[in-house]
Image (cartoon, rainbow, N blue to C red; front, side):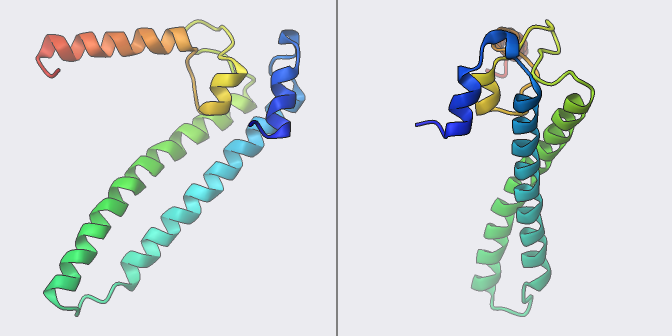
Length: 141
């Protein structure tokens, strides 16, 4: 079930697309997600800094494996932070919610699922087909 605020946004008429209420909603969502990620990245940094390097080999190996997983997550989150910053910039410039390729609305449902989306669904599908074709042509499939 959708939270009430999301349901209210989805119930708005098409001509209200990216009105002040919708823009404010997505700005809050993006800023909340950014704060959550920055907090998590800080926790990872703190855990790395506080690790006791004098532990035995088994503890050290377990820590290194956990660290490897956390660094992969941190890498994904760092890329997401960049996408959030791009989305916030697009909000400031009045471009948020519109496809970078076609200029058409991305759509509220897609933005609710992926607030950092920069392409409408059709453009994203074309991009993925091109990438698949390119990988296939290079023999990477």
